[in-house]
Length: 151
Image (cartoon, rainbow, N blue to C red; front, side, top):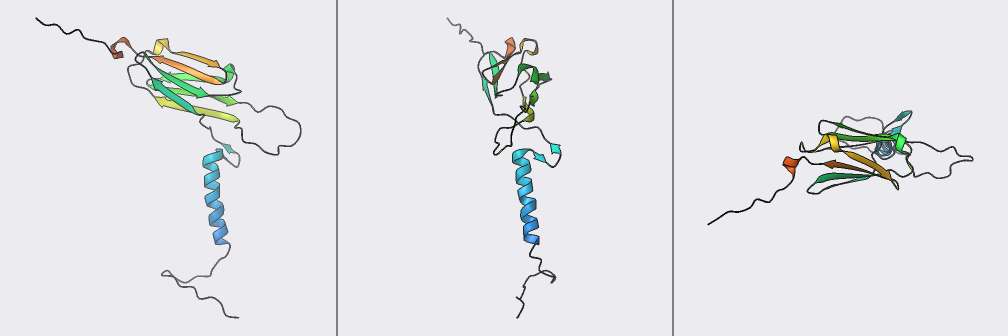
């Protein structure tokens, strides 16, 4: 039985049939790490879905946090960085998991706001699984209509 001819521009080496599986395993591991947020014992924070809107008076940040208690959420403003973090606690269950798509563990969401915010008047409310953070603008940042004078 003849061995297949291997042609390459690099130096000749032995063909390793398991190298392709190792490459595939490494690529799948990186994909799972980015999607699931965990590899081995290391758990990374995941980012919940959020919407940010701007009106003439304020910025409104709405973050989906179903099943999260108010005590498990922290909202901080440092300079212009608004950060929302916390933890979705896993419920005690009996039996074996057969399928899981809901996320548990630490979560983190951050956004950089413009400098024209009133940090002392920020309000945060958690209702129906949605955290709503209202960040008012300063008076100088609000639009004003200028009267036109003439003869």
